[in-house]
Every structure is written in structure tokens, then in C-alpha cells.
Image 1 (cartoon, rainbow, N blue to C red):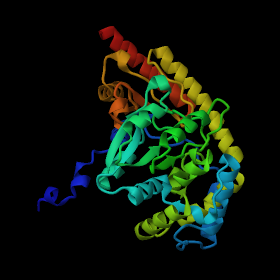
Image 2: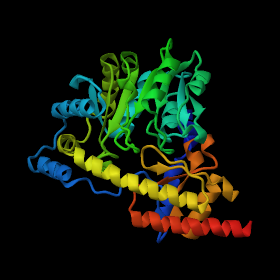
Image 3: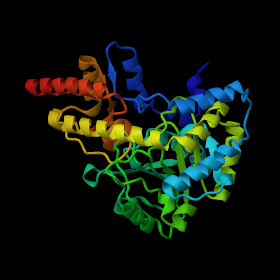
Image 4: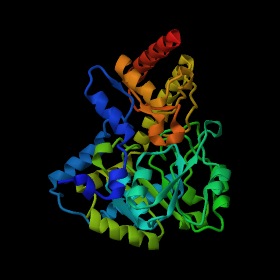
Length: 392
């Protein structure tokens, strides 16, 4: 049977994830320091794990309501109000299988074949793939190092056409660590005036911002922006709950009706045990969030200084837990640099062009790992760069 003839064209055209490629390679090698996958090295705080265990002891192993436990919906609204001044009703909360499902739901809810989706790049690899699977057209908007990888209103306006349907707003950003402060959000609001473009605001790294300024959600700056924004968040990054696979989205009621329908048919509900654990996380773990963020900040400053000392120019990120250094001084392309670094020094990082063509000349390094791992990785990367320059 010729399977290639049977696959959908959009599925067959998808490229494999550049992140997973290097993760798989690193997993097969010995003595590798993998700084490739964005996963906290912390264990989920005990109070959260215990809540999950207790829910199992009580026999809470059945499906929940499609939208999630009502108690969890309530706690999400309280959390969003307390931390980000976002006011929603519990009925406007949909609990999902990770933030990834919420992203997928939103894109499927709005994108028809031929619709254009605006993507500030470099960005998370899944956005473009989901748009393509829906028959949409990803429209990259290049963000630049000299702008601290922010989306500028000029670049946004230049990308808007009559086919523009959705703007994906990925800040704090993976892979660059770029952030959008309130003054920048007001510029984006002005650029969108007079359009019907919706926003998918991926705020999974909202708790991880540095320099004394908290994250500001674009949905919080005005009624107009709230009316056009679907906010996506989750528990993986802030609470070190990656394997629990739990996220959520909040949106205007008419939007939530459609998201809910898709979720009903595709998923049924998010994992029950994870939902009970998440209630405890939201109620009692603000301090743990702060402690982890402070530790990431220390690692951020360590790795930025180390890379710049090596001679790999590195922008100091304002959020998330990634750095995006330029490797152009080595004379190598992103893929070649990553392959040779892994082969010769057993350090795994991700080519910048995995996050969009404009990421060429950069690599993504995750610092959600121990200080000891980061120091050793910097030592090996330094050796690698010095050897390259000696041969040049």
C-alpha cells in the first residue's frame, strides 16, 4: 500500500520538530549535557504531588466535567485576578491537556483554509504546524535582536492584509526570552485598531519575568483587547508540572462556546488527578513560584555572562528560561554548530532556525537546569569555540 498517496497533504508536508531531533540524539549518547528541552529541573512541589496522591486515595479516578472541575475553574479565575488583574467568570475557563491543547483549539476555532495567521518569529515550533494542518497560511513577522525580540507596531502593520484572521502573541517568548511591557502592548493595541484580528496570547511563561517588572497580559490593558484575546496558560513551567499535562484558556463567552465544542469531541476532559493537584497549586504555591523564578534569574545572569565571555553575543532575556545567543562569530550555521557541539563536546542545544528562518545564526539554550550543569556546559562550549577559532 502506498501510504504517501493516502496521507493528507498538510500532514505529509509537516517537517519534524527541530527540538525533538536534538533531544532524541542526546538521549542516545553518554555524558551529554542537554540544554535543549524547555523543562524545569525541579520536582513538582510536594504539596502539589500530595494533593494528586490524596485524590487517588479517595478514588477520584473518573472523568470530570468537560470544561474541568468547577473548583479548579474558580481557582483559575482567582489566580488570574490576583496575579495579572485579569477578570473572568468560571464559565469562561476551559481546562485543557496542557497549554498545547488550548493553542490547538484556538487555531482550529478561527482558521479557515487560506486565512492568514500572523506569527512573530522566532517562536514556538507548534504554532506554524497547527496553522498549516488547518489549511491556514502562517505569515512570519521577524523580530530582531536590536529590538530585544519584541513585536513592533511597524512590523505588525506591514504584515496585516485583508486575509489576516489571527495574531499569535507569544510573550514572554520561547526561544528568545523577549518580553512585551505595558507601553509596547499599547502600541500593539493601536496597530490593531479598526481590524477584526483575534489574538492568541500564549502566556505560559507569565510567572517567569525578571528585572523587577511583572508580566502584563495584553488582555488586561483595555476592554477592546480583552474582547479579541484568548489567553492561554498552564502549570508546566511555573509549577514544574510538565508531566501532569494541564493547561487552560480563558476567552470571551461566545469564543468559549466554540472552543468548548471542539474540546468535547477531541478530548473529553483533562487528567482528573492533575486537576485536583492544580487546585492545591493555585491556592498555596505562590511562594514556590517566586522561589523558582528567583533561581532561574540567577541562572539567567550566569549563562548570559558566560556566553558573552566566550564570545557568543547574547541578549539578556527578560522572561522565560531560554537564551538565544548569536553564533555567527564562529562562521558556522545554526545546524552545523549544534551538530558539531553535540558530537565533539556532548552538549545539546537547539538550532535557532528550528523556530523560524530568522533564527538562523542563533541557537536556543535552556537554563532550566542546575547551576552545575550550566557551568560545565559553558566550559565545554568555551572549549568548542576556542578550537574553532584556532582552526580559522
